[in-house]
Length: 549
Image (cartoon, rainbow, N blue to C red; front, side, top):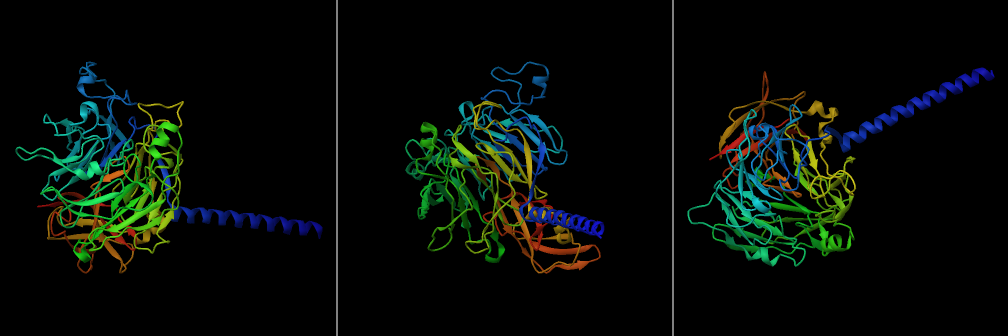
C-alpha cells in the first residue's frame, strides 16, 4: 500500500508539473500575443542607422555621416575598386541600401557630410535630402530608387540659401519641398526654388531658440488640412502660410515643464486623417522630451535628469485649440513615434534620463509603448515587449510593408567606438514584431489580391480585391500611409489616411471594394503610399499605390 501511494503521489506530481509547464507556455504565448516580440536581422549592417527611410522598391535607405571616420563596410563602386578614391574621401561606405526580401545590404556612395540632415520624398519617389554638417550643410542630394543595383546618390551643384543642420522637411501640395530651420538658420526655403527665390525669414524660430540649449532644432512640421504648415518648436507652435510668409495663428504653449525638440528631443505625429470628415480634422500628438535645463546639466555637469513622461494632444483645426495632457507609462527622451498599419501609434527607442547629444543620456528605454488614440485617457497606453539592445542617440525606426518595425542605429560617439564608452556604436538591425502579426490573428488577416490601378488621380475611385479566411466583419478599414524620413526621433512627412469605401462585394475569387482617393494634394501630397486592408484591427501586408495630379 505504501508503494502504491508513493506511485500515485509521484504521478500526481508529474501531472502537476506538466500542467504548470503547459500553463507557463500558454502564458508566454499570451504575453507574446499582446506585447509582440523582437527578431535580430543583421549582426552588422556596416553603417549605424542615423537616418532611415523606406523606399517604394521595398528597400530601406540608411546612412550616417561622412566626416567621423570609417564605417564597418567598404564601398564597391569603380573608384574604390581601383583603389583611387577622390581627394578627401575614403573607401568606407557611409550609406547602405537594405533589401527587406533578402536581408542583405548594398554599400552606397554619399559624398558630402549628411550629419544631422533632413529629407522628404518627391512625388516621383525620389528622396530629396538636404543639408548636414561642414561641407554638406547647404547641399541637396537625390536618391532615385531602382529595381536593380544601379542607383546611387547624386548631388546638386546648386547650393541652398542657408545652412541646414538639424532642419525639417515637408512635401507640399504643389510638389515642392519646404525646408524649415536648422542651427542658427531662423528661416525657411523651398526645393526646387522659383527664379530669384531665396530664404524667407521666420522670427518664430529665433523666438523659440533657448540660449545655450536651443531646443528648437528639428522643428516638428505637419501639413494641415487647409494647406498651411503647423510648426512646433521648443514648446510653442504656429500655423504658417508659407506662400505669403505670414503667421496665421499662434497656438497655446504646451504644458509639461520642458522642451520637446532637439536636443530635448521628444517626438511628434499627426494622428490618422479620416474620410468621414473629408480629412479636415487634424490632431497633433507630441510625446516625451526633457525638462528645461536638462541639456546643460547632461553636457557640462554629467547630471542626467529624468525625461518627461507627458504627452500633449491638440486638435489644431478646432476654433479653440487646447492641449490635452496625459502621461506615458514612463519617462522618455529621444523616442521615435510611428503610425502602425492599424492606425495606432508606436513609441519606441530612447532613454529615461538626459537628452540627445554625445554621451548625454542614461537608462535606455527598452520597452516600446503602444498609444491607442480612440481610447479614453487612462486607457490609451500599453507597455510592449522590451528589446535587449539600447537604442539611444542616433537610433531610428521605420514601419515595413509587412507590418514589422525595422529598428537600427544608436551612436552617442563621434565616430565608431565599440568599447570604453557607456553606449558603444550599434550596428545591429532588428525588427519589432507587433502583436497583430501573431499567428493567432491569421484567421482574420486579409490578403490584397488586386488593385485596379496603382497610379490614382485625386477624387477618383479604384477597386481593391482581397481575400479573407472567413467572412469580413463590420470593422473593415482601408489605410493609405506615407512612410517617413526618420532621424533624431523625428519622422518627417509621416501621414496616414483612412479612405472612403463602397459596400464590400463577394465573388468567386474573394471580395472587392471601391475606394475613393483623397480629394486633393492638400489631404495627401502626391507620391507613393502603402495601402493596407485592416479587418477588425488585423492588417494585411501593404501594397504600394501612388496618388497623382
